[in-house]
Amino acid sequence: MTASNPPSDEPTLHLDSAAHLMNSISSRLADRLGLVSPSGRRRLAPAPPALVLVAHGSRDPRALRTVRALRDRVREQRPGLPVHLGHIELNEPLLPDTLAALGASPAILVPLLLGRGYHVKRDIPEMAAASPARTRVAAPLGPHPLLVDTLHARLLEAGWPPAQDAATRRTGAVVLAAAGSRDPDSATDTRRTARLLADRLGVPVIPAYASAATPTVDTAVRALAARGRHRVAIASCFTAPGRFATQCARQALWIASEPLGAHEAMARLVLHRYDRTQALTEADLASA
Image 1 (tube, rainbow, N blue to C red):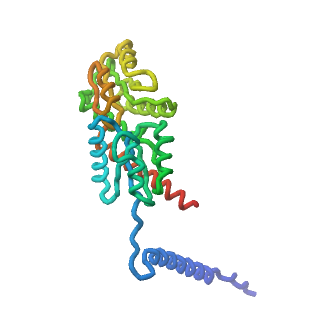
Image 2: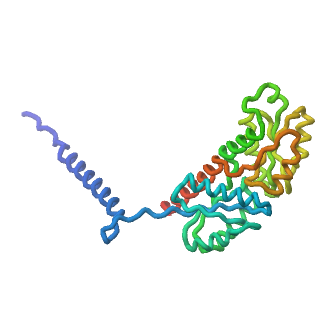
């Protein structure tokens, strides 16, 4: 007696394939319909959140010109993105006024500050919470490799040798001059930036401060000289010109770089902080 063949799986496979195809078509159709309004018109993609640059503010008129130039450079790099400026103090527009003008629109605030501190942790979030705008606050600009790109470029402009010889490696050094803060996280961020810059330059880089923290710039310069580092450059870790940047530059025994300003890498860093915060916001909404 001839054994009967086992039942074939072929009909089941055909049914599974057909079901998969129908699901795929339905999914694609739903995606397409989602772009069409009930009136039959294609829906526009939602506008991106506004980008609000948050500057500290300064009585030095060069500071306002500098942050405006940085704002304009960010606009050039991201056409169509609404980019605004607000200050914590001393300059107009003040941040609360900028946010009030946005109404209930979404916005991402990017602090033009170079480390964590009181302004980043308290002032900016409190101003944002008191506004009608729907806001998220991005991380400060430092530490980050793009910040180091700008510091390096400013040092080269000031006269730092692009190709270091043995003498520069033996006697050269940099003091990274920052504003200073009593918040230990701020000092941690500045030290991290100093290490990244030291890796780039191949010479010691010591962080020093204009106020509220130690060592001072003058103390750091003298300490390096005592170690045989006589070609000491001061790298200005300030967003814009102002009292602290000028005070630190005067301590230079050799060269001092200009503040970070509207360098192209700074605009890229601002947009990186914006994009990162927007991506995190969308991820939070998707998981809610």
